[in-house]
Amino acid sequence: MRRLSAILAADVVGYSALMAENEAGTMAALRAHRAEVFDPETERHGGRIVKLMGDGALVEFPSVVDAVECALAVQSALAEQGGPIKLRIGINLGDVILEGDDIYGDGVNVAARLEGLAAPGGICVSSVVHESIGNRVEAEFTNAGAHEVKGMPRPIRVWRWPAESTPHQASEPLALPEKPSIAILPFENMSADPDQEFFADGIAEDIITELSKFRSLFVIARNSSFAFKGQALDVREIGKRLGVHYVVEGSVRRAGNRVRVTAQLIDAADDTHLWAERYDRGLEDIFAVQDEVTQAIVTTIEPHLADTERQRARRKPPDSLGAWENYQRGQWHMYQYTSDGISQAMEFQERASEIDADFAPAYAGLAFALYYHVLLGFSDDRERDLDRAEEVGRRAVSLDASDPFAHVALGRTYTIRGDHDTAIRHCDRAISLNPSFSGAHFGRAHSLWMSGDAEAAIASNSESIRLSPHDPMLWGFLASRSIAMTLLGRYEEGLDWASRALGQPNAALFASVAELAALGLLDRAGEAAIALERARRFKPDVTTGFVNLVLPITDPDYHALFMSGLRKAGMPD
Image 1: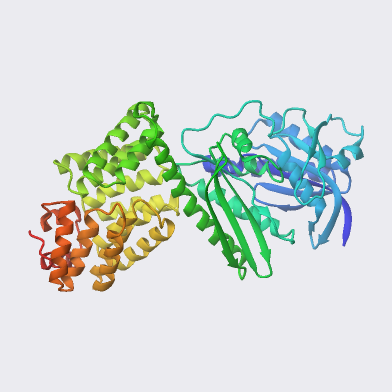
Image 2: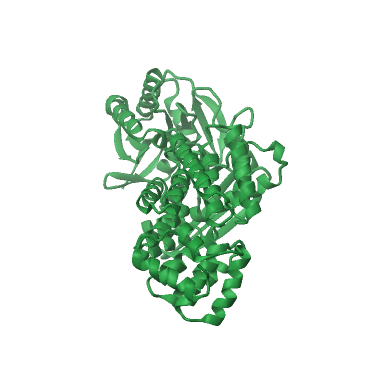
């Protein structure tokens, strides 16, 4: 069944950012807005709320005058209240298809596009709506020109209230934040089926949500990036208008029971493509596919951005680096896992904290560098460095208790001191803040096998590897899994994972230690002798006493097994 209807599409401005800042307060404000303003005005003007979509709403009216007057009343009431809730509203008059209580069709799609073009607190209407209301509404709409709208064969003319500039008419480019800033543009639906629009939007929205959990990134909220939906604009222009350094764009194409999703990461400053990938999946469960593809994209983008930022900081003169760049430069040096690299990492993190005394990542980065300074045998005063690591780790958590990296950095200081329950609690807290943070799963695994649960450690290690298969700490993920396998008596598997760890270009001492334990327990004396020489290239005076000190295995059976493997491999006490 079809009918002609006026369609109002509304969306909350900056919803993701509001929820991240104060979830309970935002939900309370949204409920109050609906109860006090939106629902009563909709009912008063004869509208029918078709559906609510988290931060948005779709409403059908029998009259364009009623739809526009309702929108004006809602926006005026919100402006007077001055609260956190602001809406964008789009209104169109068009043919809709009824299916139960829901509605579909171009009339709905165009209303949604118009909503994306509205300014915060504003309204955009199509030309047919503007012509229909004539002078029957006491409000002045200004001509915003013709816009190409996805799904329509030709541009549509847009009219705007109030007369301020649209979100695409900023007079000056926005300043770039210090940390990496990124916008996820709406994915383009390249399928013949318009219903796939929801799947395409869902992919982009989920990527925004997941990337927003990384405190190291500045992610543009969904409403701002979706304002460019259907617009044929240059990526460099989008970057300037949103004030971001990076942009992700993509597409969705469905054919039968298969779907192909493409995504690409672009440096908006010069329109350089940094990464691109294609994902082909069956559609037995569309939501499972959406989750799987989102996870795959997110776990590629975040490490790629981190590496790009580290390389960018390396190319700058040290004297010109700000707090964020000193932090990134320090991280790059730490990931070399050499004595000189760790020392320089500590210097850069100290410098970052001097520039900005409230910059939590600098303290977390320093705690991590001090941890590896002790773990890899470079420290000449273990207790001094561990006390300092715990001090700055606590400082990082106190400055930003929502930063998963801060919790993991502090947790590692407890790991090396044998307080595995506390270490695991901090890693679990980090995972609750960001389930995609691979370092938290790795830290958890490290304490799990040392405290007696190697099976659970393997599961956590598998998750860390899955989440970040190209991580600069990958050698550690692999070595940790190797030791867990060995502790379970699976010596051949332990040896295989140790070999993989040693194959990483920045592998450090404990990849060799993992190899030695497995070889010793396999009674391969000849290979163990060669492996011991390899370990001595990392630390010439390595002993079981040193290993026992920095890998405090508190489970007595695991401890006895591991140390016997090292001794059988020829490592002195």
